[in-house]
Length: 114
Image 1 (cartoon, rainbow, N blue to C red):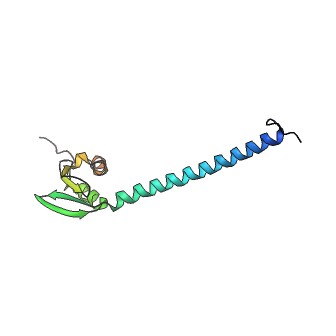
Image 2 (cartoon, rainbow, N blue to C red; image 1 turned 120 degrees about the horizontal axis):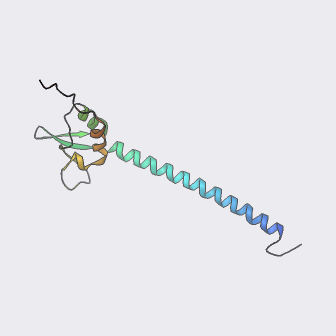
Image 3 (tube, one colour; image 1 turned 180 degrees about the vertical axis):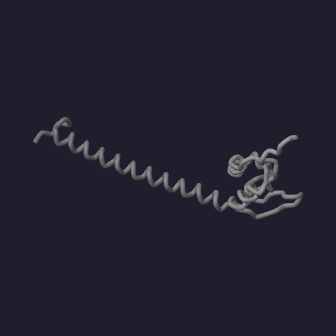
C-alpha cells in the first residue's frame, strides 16, 4: 500500500470529504436563509402602528390596515406615525415599510381645468 499523500486512495478520500463538506455548507446556508426570511416576514406582519388622523392618535393598526387607510387617502406621506422602538413620532415618508404602500397607491384622478 502506498502511504504517499499523492496516492490515488488519499486523493479520492480527500475529494469525497470535500464533497460532503460542501453539501453540509450548502444545506446550512439554505436553512439560515429560510430562518432569516421567516423572521423578517413575521416582524413586519406583527408590527403595530399608531398614526395621527384629524389631530388625534388612531390605532393600533397592522400594515394591512395601514395599506387600507392609504388607499382611502386617510394616510399620506406627511402623516405622522409611531411604532414600538421609535423614539418619537415621524412622518410616513421616513418609514420605508409604510412609504412603499404610499408609493404604490395611484395619484388622484386629475380634474379637468376649464
